[in-house]
Amino acid sequence: TYVVTENCIKCKYTDCVDVCPVDCFREGPNFLVIDPDECIDCTLCVAECPAEAIFAEDDVPADQQHCTALNAELAALWKPIIERKDPPADADEWNGKPGKLPLLER
Ligand code: SF4
Ligand code: F3S
Image 1 (cartoon, rainbow, N blue to C red):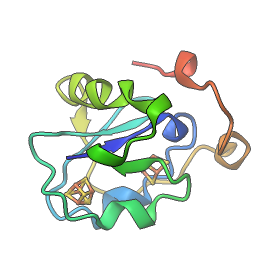
Image 2 (image 1 turned 90 degrees about the horizontal axis):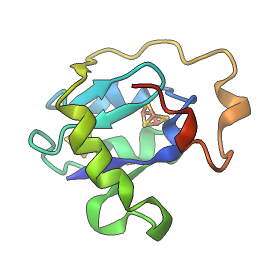
Image 3 (image 1 turned 90 degrees about the vertical axis):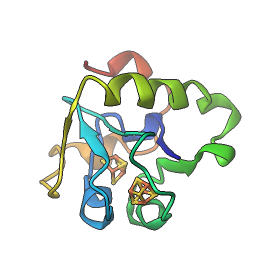
Image 4 (image 1 turned 135 degrees about the vertical axis):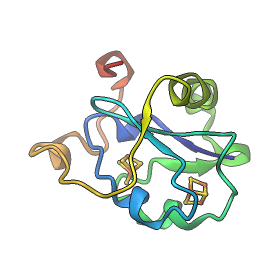
């Protein structure tokens, strides 16, 4: 499966959603996750993310390993998002900021 990592938090550009052939993104208030039971490993979303937040499970950076379980946990709670929407107005200001995990809204 593919995994959305912390840099999506408060960026939430949603470009990833438009290319996913199986609609496996799930939407929270300020973060998206991938449903690991639905992702078919097509790789298309990786290049679309302006925040470079998406990785193959085997390539998730060491400091983001917790995100694999987080995607599975939140995918079970959140609803599908199937169309791109406008990102938050301050998305670019948050892109690349470290330590965003405490800001995740559920
Ligand atoms: Fe969707 Fe493909 Fe990305 Fe998996 S790798 S989330 S199937 S776009
Ligand atoms: Fe998040 Fe990147 Fe998609 S910031 S919403 S994973 S395009």
